[in-house]
Image (cartoon, rainbow, N blue to C red; front, side):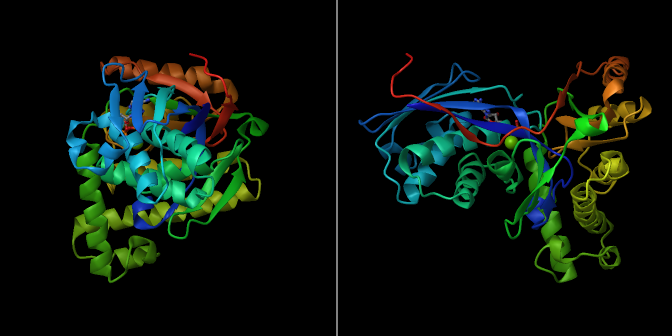
Length: 373
Ligand code: ADP
Ligand code: MG
């Protein structure tokens, strides 16, 4: 019996680069998913989520081996996929009760799905498979999302939830898995990172995500490289005859360069205000070249910049969800109010704004041998 916790994330920069073998720079949110787990000896698997109260699941470890997955509610395929992947890798699970509860807004581009799978994965590791490595956990949780939930993500969200540390950005090379913790102390510079959940659902995201992934693969093939990570210069992309593939490639190539440049500047302790124009350039690239923005995201970015934010961009896959803005500490109220006013003027759903500092990655909350129930 015990409790485990994994965070949601925002990505400071490096969007749609992870499935192109590129670079990302996320931080963990202080919002996360708590997984309370109790081992049981009878082969039964019971799943409960406070966010899906009508969709409880009672099944067995043996049933996960069969083809009966269509009967499971969609949300449960994330944790069941994690359990199944532990089984497939040869780890015996006698049975388990999992109770889940999350403070990450669901479907807001802040990665509630990885918070869910990663909290379950570290519970299973600690209870049944202590030798499973962080790399294995990233693979297990990504497979749960890709194969069992059917969402074709890269490894950004799972890596962020599992590897981020408090007070730091995670600079991750998604090709090699090499990572570096970069201190990100905004308070020292009288700055804040403002997150704006626009409340607009990212409904198109699955089909458009698959389309972008295919377009990037086609652009890489046309350039004769394995992935767009291997086409490092803009003049290379300019050789592409198809204007759409040229734009897609240009986003990935310039985005990878922005991630590396920001990591470089912050590593040397530069004032984060100096990276702000790169954040805004990242948004422009996502809007115009990668075409994954949406009116509420553009409205929030423009309103934030007009009200004095140093830089702002959509975060997550786009089509809805959230933006981030780098704002002077003493201007947060003003910038938030300006965004709310801009939303009200366009009759958008009122946004939710909050400031974040980089929180810890996935960890056990407390161990207990007695049941609180
Ligand atoms: P995001 O990860 O940006 O929040 P996704 O569409 O990737 O958005 O994942 C959201 C899905 O993850 C939900 O529709 C649900 O199926 C599942 N999910 C996430 N957190 C929970 C939770 N606490 N309880 C139940 N399902 C959850
Ligand atoms: Mg997700």
